[in-house]
Amino acid sequence: MRVMVIVKANKESEAGVLPDKEILTRMGKYNEELVKAGIMLAGDGLHPTAKGKRVRFSGAIRTVIDGPFTETKELIAGYWLWQVRSMEEAVEWLKRAPFDGGEEVEIRQVFEPEDFGANLTPELREQEQKLREQISSKK
Image (cartoon, rainbow, N blue to C red; front, side, top):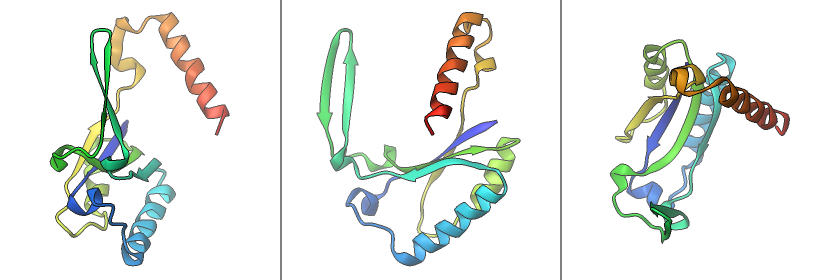
């Protein structure tokens, strides 16, 4: 199963405070462990919301909202995409992460095609597979 591990933003990340060399070194070692174990598929930190935008959809109306966004407990500072056998395995890996400053990290399972049952028709499954192949070929 794939999971997205979501690192929540805090006042420092929203202020654009970059991690220091020690934190980057510890995180790099942790990411190496994840890659060697075949767990990590992707992962990145995100710029603060001051550099972001949101688009609100209301019928045919699209409203663009410029950052920053004030409610930091609902914001994302970074993420990983992991391939694990179970949610329990994801939790065990996350417990090893080099966080120690009160961070809050969320783990969410990613939908797979089979999760959609009959609603994902053979034609839609074929389309999805073709798109995944196109993405893979561009890497």
